[in-house]
Image 1 (cartoon, rainbow over the protein chains, first blue to last red):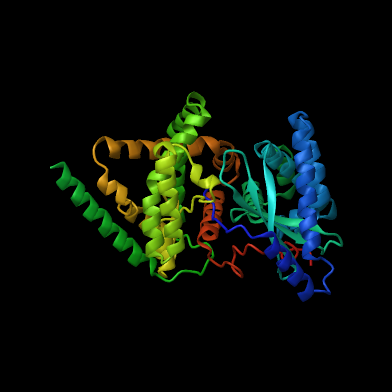
Image 2 (cartoon, chains in turn yellow, orange):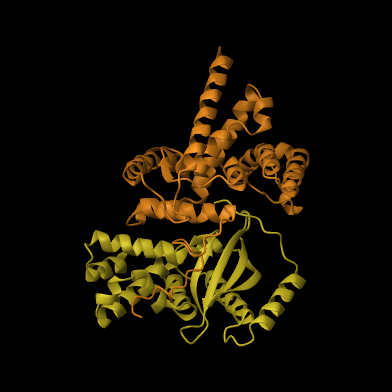
Length: 201
Length: 253
């Protein structure tokens, strides 16, 4: 995929932006600085898993843990399921959330290998209504750097990721469409969807 | 005679581009998904999947396996260098003078100090690739996006992007200068570079085309999100709002 170049902001501009953001929104529980720290911690944890040299299945288990720790998984899962979640039972919703977590960890955990030897540089942060947008540049060996944006929310009571965009490609929206297509294929049967999700990814 | 055929082809292609651009002006939903020819597009998508499975995927896998990474990078650098003059032309047409200068320097540095473009010393000097195309120029000029479509072999496009692709056959000043073996080398580098990209992104493309429940819908969404991001289209408040908050669409509230 192509990448849109942003001029690299200097450290001073980033700090100025951070300062301005903090001054402008002193009442917010979730600060841009905290969102930035969250991204940095998650990236460090992911890099540690990649560097561990474990087997793929062990790494995917670790990624599942990272996904659950840093991501607001119940919200992402139920929101991706959409209106069918309303008629689902509490047991179905919890089984769906669990199956969705495993599916995401397998689908994207398999791919984290591609990030080996790479690094992520935080460029800036910005308030987007109740979300904080953390824009970063990902550097992979032998590839042009590309834009990765993390969206952080504190509405679960803790600072968590609710979405990730890679060169504009929106993880939450693409998974919402994918879950919708999987459910259609099963004629709207949520239990069958949960069965499929446990195998998918 | 060959020249006559080429020039009449060029005329027909330009006419097609003009028609496409005028078609773009049909009113469309702003920034949602506008896909009135979905049924036809889905058939084309199946055709494209077949082409990928039978030709593109095996060829690019063979290319990626046989040709060492260094040589593949060299070839894609070469194709990229030859494409810089087209980026310069489009940047000028967009009024982005700084980008035009940037791409000019990138071209000169890589052509002179990068073994004719096979190496990419420019990126290390801060002259990274600022890829653009005539589709972007049309966007800057205010041409609407038009409807979404999937074209045989070409893949996902908007009408505006498709018109841009036709015009881009003529926007590279190098192509008018290069003749015979030079032109062949340019085409070959572009094709090989395409196979290289299919190989590098193999896991991503396979996952979209062969593992997803509705690869047409996935390809459409991913293309539109990425294209609008690249152009800097503001999609806030639409179906493709990048800052949609999953909390706001929770069904249980």
